[in-house]
Each structure stands twice: as C-alpha cells, then as structure tokens.
Length: 205
Image (cartoon, rainbow, N blue to C red; front, side):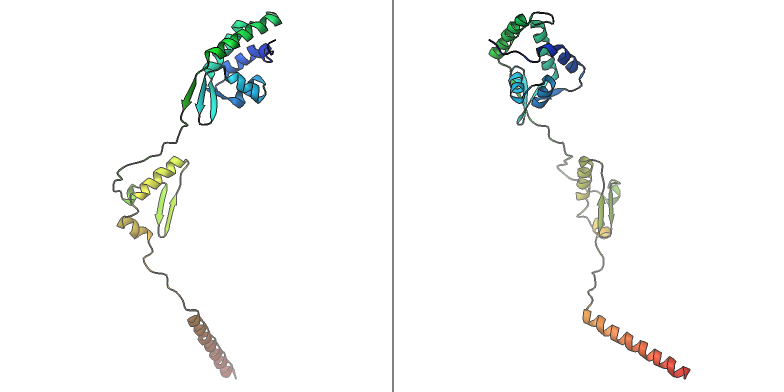
C-alpha cells in the first residue's frame, strides 16, 4: 500500500501561497516549511522537481513548483475519494520519478569589482569626495564595498606621484629628545628659580 501524502488536502492552500509569493526560488528548508515535512521527506519531494544546483545547495524555481502542484491537483482534485486520490497521486509520483527531473548546475554569483587593466594618471583634484588626504592621514568613506573598492583604485593611481607625497608625507623628521638633556635643563631651571627667590628675599630685607 502506498504511503499517504500528508499535504495532499492542503495542496490548494500551498498552491495559493506559492502563487502570491514573490520568492523566485525555494530551497530545501523552504520546501520543508511550506509542505510541513521532515527534512528527509522534503528531500524526497524535491527529487520530483527540476532542481537548480548552486554550490552545495539545491533550489527549485517558483514556476516549476507551481507546475508540480497544478499536476497534483489535476490528478487528485478536491472532492474525490480518499482511496482514489491516493491511487492517482501514487501513479503520478511514479511517473515523475521514472521520467527523472533534470538538475541544472549554476555557478554562485560573485560580486563585480571595478577593475581597470591600465590605470591612468590622475591628480589629487580628480579624486572622489570620499577620499580625504592630509599630512600623514588618508580617510576613505563609502556606503558599499563597491564604493570603497572604487575609491581604493582611484587612490592607487595617485599614491606614487609627487603631488600625493607633497601633501601626505611629513616634511620634517621627528626630533628625538635625549632624556639626559631634559634632566640637565630641569636642574638649571630649578637653580634659576632658587636664585630669583633669594634675590627677592634679599631685596625685601
């Protein structure tokens, strides 16, 4: 005896949900939730549908899912007897599995980065407003990674120029202070303060 289809009575409601949905594709978890199935039963159901392989995941298009549900309802329309519906669905599923549902392989989408093979010379004035260059400081802002990548590419076209160096690099080396020299200066300053205090006391007397 064929195993009963738990979602057969809810097939019209499932068809309506898919019809009004804006989702273009359904993954295994989506099928599981839509049909209220256990993971294994959801995988068995997906084997009867044309699948799209994206990386390690399998997806079903909305159009193929609608066509499948319409075939199920045509084979076992609402109102027909329970036994007759079971026999009809068993025959339909056997036919679909025998025919074999196609599997289409699709490469995962990769972000398109702005790449220029031959950078052209640019001036600091031509840099976008998202780049701020000052003495020893470069600030880059952006709302998306594409905008940041575009700014980095623009910066790479000027970073080796003399104009960038003149604005960014420190013009004078940082002077290093000898701690011993600071100590000597402090001693002289303290001596000067003592002499001034002594002179004021002598004048007051």
